[in-house]
Image (cartoon, rainbow over all chains, first blue to last red; front, top):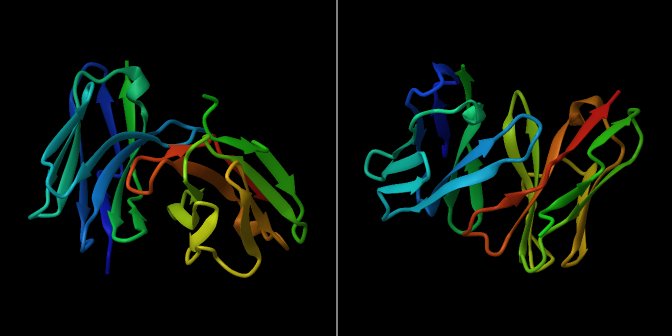
Length: 111
Length: 113
């Protein structure tokens, strides 16, 4: 069964610290993997998109990695800020049009 | 660029009533998606249009749900009759191509009492 599992479910860290969010998937075949940030009460906003052949992609303080062999992706946030408090959602696409969402990781940044 | 525009932002309705949610995608985007988000199930894709044509509606829960895209700049999601279990945030998203990132609207929070 095609699934996307994210961990942890929630995470609390102090402002300025780094953190890493995990996404494991069993999807096959695989088109691309995306990470989204969703602020409370808002729609998700795309952070990164990676295809099968890409290992890493950065967007400012956000760096996503992908290991297609182990079917794992991570999102690393460097020098966290209060505005990073949000839900982070991993989304995997299968050809031609199937999309599978993870349940998300809720990140809380404390001052 | 005003982004993806959804209306209304909030909707409270009684069980059994018809509900219509509206979406205006970003101009030039060929793909439009309707999603539902709940605490229990997370984000779920309901239906996807490409060039105004429904491509995949396998996520539509049941016959009470219907979606239309009469032209490239407007889409509706209708629930008739509504039930309390339909309470959720409904998002519309558009994309220049299904293989690119989606731009989401701010969502419609639907409460069916």
